[in-house]
Image (cartoon, rainbow, N blue to C red; front, side):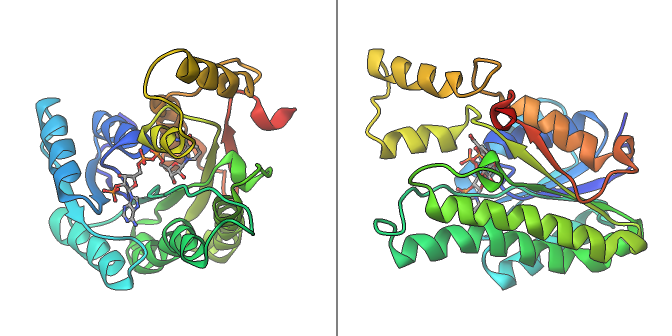
Length: 259
Ligand SMILES: NC(=O)c1ccc[n+]([C@@H]2O[C@H](COP(=O)([O-])OP(=O)(O)OC[C@H]3O[C@@H](n4cnc5c(N)ncnc54)[C@H](OP(=O)(O)O)[C@@H]3O)[C@@H](O)[C@H]2O)c1
């Protein structure tokens, strides 16, 4: 097992890519704390993980964009499991809009969760990661590498995550801490469902099929990604398999940005 004896905190681990990462980490022997704002979603995730036979899992309710919550998440993880080896800054939200249509509140919300949340959790995790010579894996996006239309706050936040990753990698390399990020293409998760809802795509029927086909065709591989495919890449960057890799932004995008 690749993470035997390791302790990980996965923000936004209650569903989607974060949940797939948590499940894979558990299968690889890690003890995992997951976070999210919804208590109900968190409890559901823990029940599912326990059903799979994993007992060393804990849910910590909190908002990564709030300093007190971010600090508390890290402290509870260490109190519960004794150390911290891996931080996965995965919690994220998507709100669309151009500079003209996105409100100031939309901008603040997306930047606060996606970018500031990554900064805050990393800040409070670093003292513990220094002790274990741990790893940070941030979830950026293809939208942090290439622009998309009507996604101003999201692109700005994810572009920030990519450079935050690289700058942190430089600052902490000598301390034995590796910092990398994954840049997924479109992945079938509740976030994509929410994006479709906002774009008035029906929940079923030919219009939904057409929309999903168009999204799939944006990727040279010709399909939308699965959360488990991103999770495997996060595992690679979190584990010793990537021991000489730091400061990288690894695409998991079916060739999207190779075009
Ligand atoms: N799906 C895609 O196509 C795609 C593509 C590229 C990158 N990504 C990135 O991958 C990451 C995971 O996305 P996903 O698709 O798995 O999304 P998702 O299914 O919507 O899950 C998001 C997770 O983040 C949590 N979260 C959101 N805001 C939070 C906050 N302020 N504090 C703490 N937790 C919060 C959510 O729980 P609560 O709502 O209960 O807080 C949930 O657990 C995000 O960073 C996203 O930007 C996704």
